[in-house]
Image 1: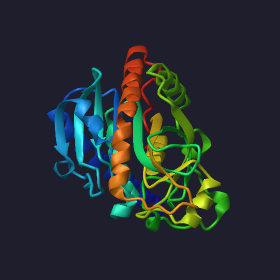
Image 2 (image 1 turned 60 degrees about the vertical axis):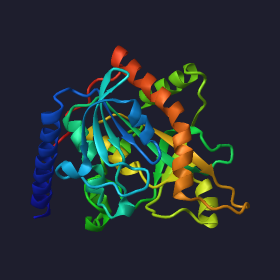
Image 3 (image 1 turned 90 degrees about the horizontal axis):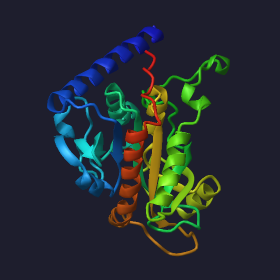
Amino acid sequence: MKLFADQLAAVVLDATVAETAAVIRAGWPELPRAAIVLGTGLGSLAEHIAIEAEWSYRDLPHFARSTADGHRGRLLAGRLAGVPILAMDGRFHAYEGYSFSQITFPIRVFAEFGVSFLILSNASGGLNPTLRSGDILLIDDHINLMGVFGSSLPAESREPMADSRNTVFPASVLRPLYDARLRNLSVKLAAEENSIPLRRGTYIAMLGPNYETRAEYRWLRTLGDVVGMSTVPEVLAAGELGLPVVAFSMVTNVFRPDDAQQTTSDEVIHAAANAEPNLRRVVTRLLIECDTNSPLAPHPTPLP
């Protein structure tokens, strides 16, 4: 019975993805080379896209709505540095009340278009004391503290395994989720682009919606370099779909547990916006390089 329910859910999901893609194709018949997700405070990058079509999320069937600060809530189709792309100007978060299937639905739509790779961005709090506000951190890997280990279903709908010996782990667990070719190319291009310093490290994902306590920051520092409330569900979905991913995190503040300080959403948005020009230069060069030299083959057709 459960197998039948899962198969039915997959058919329904495929149908909703196809319906949304059809709406986009009707307004923009191009084939995107890549897709970009713009996080908190990074919407100004959208101003440099030659927009050929755009949709409010409320006008796209099955899309959720962006309610977080700094997320405009629109899908853009056009060209960045002459490369055809789709871009989300704002994402969805679990703390907004959305399931993980809703959060990752746009990633499945991008895969339906056959994009060759996915560029993700977010704003994060710095844990590593060597980081500075305004740094760009290239995510090498993540630690998932969001309570979900697959993208399709919300955590509350998952049934516990009666026998762990029969557990089938997602393929994404067995291979790197962040594409090594894209990461190495990003480092190379950042160095060439006015010597933009590109830090590297581990992103820790929390559910939110809150900034961490001093005790939590001390604990998290033993695990990784930055902390945020997004990105990991999208990465897991891309892994399931065989879609190469590169992810950048804008460090908006660096927490020092012995100093009295308080972080606000306005400060996070402002700091991320100040870091955006460097991110834009790296992303633009990455798009041009991948489009010109085609280092990435189109992603494989996902398994049913």
